Image 1 (cartoon, rainbow, N blue to C red):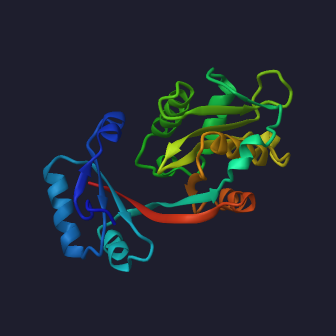
Image 2: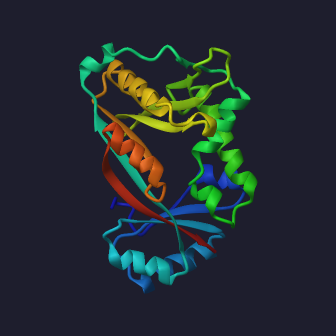
Image 3: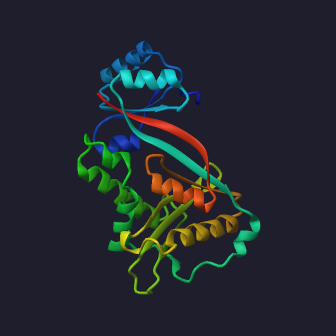
Length: 243
């Protein structure tokens, strides 16, 4: 864990978006009594929601989180793969094009990508929290605030995107943010073609690795990424503790 372990870190963006105070608490071998003290302090500061972050093998912290009444909202997994410099010369499907233009179908794809999002699955959030979050994620990606490039897959050439991938930078790697294939277009290797394009972009940007974050409970996505050549790099347990 980082130097912030067992110390509440206020989350300004989350608090502003959700309309109430939110903080992150990275747990490191925290006993139930110590966590109870942290929770009491958080309540005293007016916090309403704590994200508790624990390593999967930290049995003490995971047990303390459960004892405190926290819900395991996400077993967050980061997958990574090496990318060779020569891949910058790899051809990209002509159906894939960069875009900065919002379209209804891109918004639909962004929402489809979040099927296993903790912001959708936690019933304490209003449904508009998830939809608003992913719409904003798409908009901020298209405007290059959080993504360097947005790729759309359109086999018909009629602006009806069947696939979406956003690509940015994180941890010194190229980072896939949103990746989705429309439910009506799956089984046509669109996802594999989008990942291949992301590999080409990674190499063209002079980076040696490509990463993507998903949920271990999203077994179809995890299986897809493994088939594409990704390997697990890190897993974190994220609990939601409502105060």
